[in-house]
Image (cartoon, rainbow, N blue to C red; front, side, top):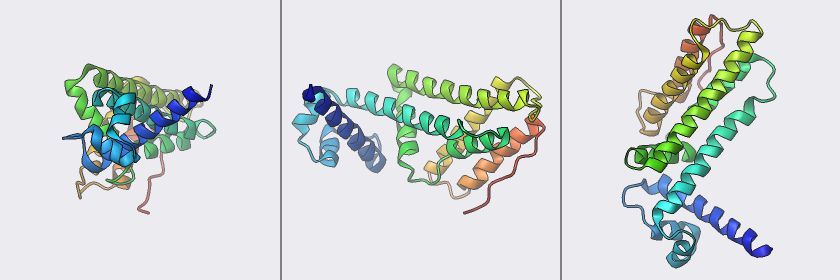
Length: 205
């Protein structure tokens, strides 16, 4: 019984190491050897668990999608105020800095999606999950009379997620003209306008 558990721990260690390697080096030229060095393991052992680098990258992408979505989902569950739920959703949808490891890995792997159907499906899955998360927040606010949407909530949600992705890419790419807090406020202003609702903006920390 202990063996499968230990294998699960090993695989988790390798996924974490691959995430770190991608954050440091990017996808270009990434090798099993790089992952092994980050994990403090032999390349042969990593290859035993993941016969190809692509096998490992798929698991890294799956793990990153789940972590990114779960972090946002769990953060808003106990918030009763629809406006605060919306602000929290926006805050967690945009990276805090260019060196955010989770967002860096997601952007790297999302770009990889243009050449790989599996990664493309994972990108689509995350988009759909985030749209669903926003749609739920918007519908709760609408049902309570706090939000008055000027268009279908799913359309608003899709636009909000797309804005987050665009701003997030600029932040990860170190565009000096885009700050995380100003990016969040731009998304909030859009949402405030289409929901006919006043939403307190973020300040620079």
